[in-house]
Amino acid sequence: MTYAPARLYEEIAYVAYHFHWQRESILDLTHRERREWVREIARINTRVNEGG
Image 1 (cartoon, one colour):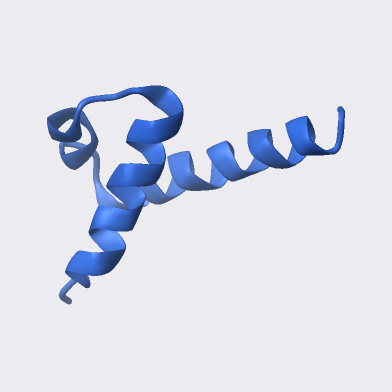
Image 2 (cartoon, helix red, strand yellow):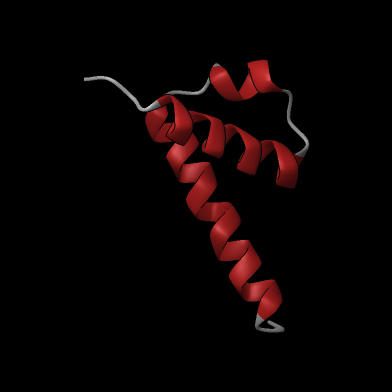
């Protein structure tokens, strides 16, 4: 299974922007781990934006 480079860059940028992690650290994560962090960041953003 291949992973679209554009999607990978999007995930890296998203995690790096919000958590200030280095690209290499994010790339060391498995696809599943990276997706979990993306989901968690999205949940945090939703709570913050809703004032909760």
